Length: 349
Image 1 (tube, rainbow, N blue to C red):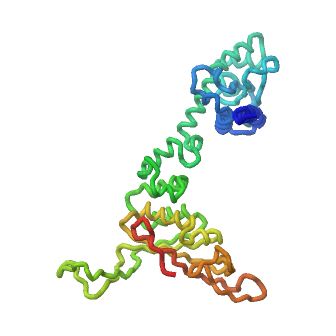
Image 2 (tube, one colour):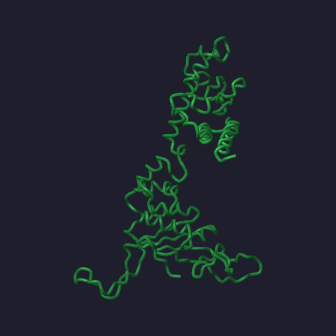
Image 3 (tube, rainbow, N blue to C red):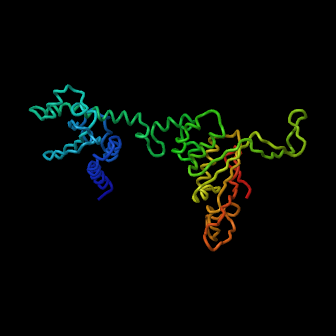
């Protein structure tokens, strides 16, 4: 059996299994899964003929108060080749929320003579209304049309508000697209504030506490070869204390995997640096520190990738009663400095 036949068989068996659970599912999610289960068919509501669609939508016709969106699934035993029928409990031309005159509803509900052809005729419009309702919801309800990695059109338009809608930007290589979309409200503001920086970093490290301190004092050393005109920027000495261009970012993680992920060169550290590059750009500097409780530090074991000299290595005293010490002091770990250049400068160990 070749791969094409196997794929066709898997697709054909997927749709009946999906419809078996249809009464327990949300309408929009069900339609989305139906399209995925029948990829050889056009999407629902996109063609002129309903014969191209894998299912048919009809109204349930019940006059009670429905407790679900899909009432039941029906199949024609005499003509099994026909697509299955999904009885819906909303947007019906007859039934509990009917928009037709009451005598049409009464005839169908009481199953009088001629009620079945009348219901079939009204369901021609009901199927079209239902599929177009799904298309409208898919277009204008962002979670319904979202695709993994933000590849849908709405996500790309939202990223365009941040200047990231065209091509693969450098920040998307280090920060996942869904995290960039989550910080859209903060990152789209023109003014860069300490609260905004803490907010976007919180999206990168959600299980940690972020503190941003403005006007962090930094000693700036002067190059002896630079010209210092008198009366303009002449400085006595080899440097000066600058408080106008640097912020201090303190990250306090609450889990050990976050502590290890924030080590320079690892995934979370790269995401933090990518967020700093994206939010601060090249106009400001940031010093990164991590405040870690001793209990979250990895054990100082040999031949371990978790222990790094100058970062996560500590000498502990074994108490003999418990692995955790009575007091849990905080250790300050330098994670590096963002200086406005693509390659961050690592902090001292």
